[in-house]
Length: 131
Image (cartoon, rainbow, N blue to C red; front, side, top):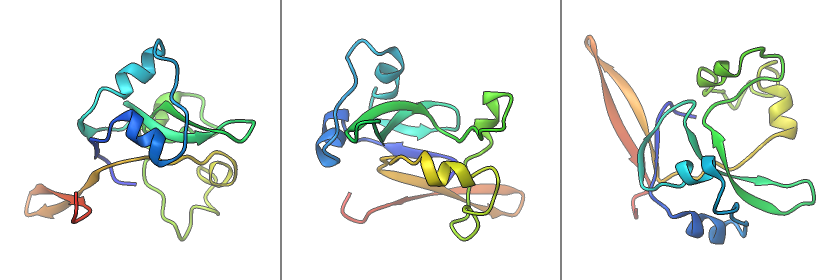
């Protein structure tokens, strides 16, 4: 996962695309997360995800961007846990249990990759060609 991403799809469109339910309108985190468009979603910010419920339904829910490992004492560690390599995620203690049991879909319109140019970093926006 990259450090910043964008999301311009409406919550209703996300729910329709993934055959998911929307949260109650009074959910405060959901209201903040679903205030779209979002052009710079950063670690620890609330954003919509699609997750499974205990009874197998899909729900569009507000979660904070990042991963808080089960062993972490402080939830702020989630702001730093945003990158996992597909080749090693199943073996790394920070990601292993989450990969097996706590997955979700993170809808996004695009993401930023940063490339170092001398002493500066240049962001590049990556998106589907038809968006």
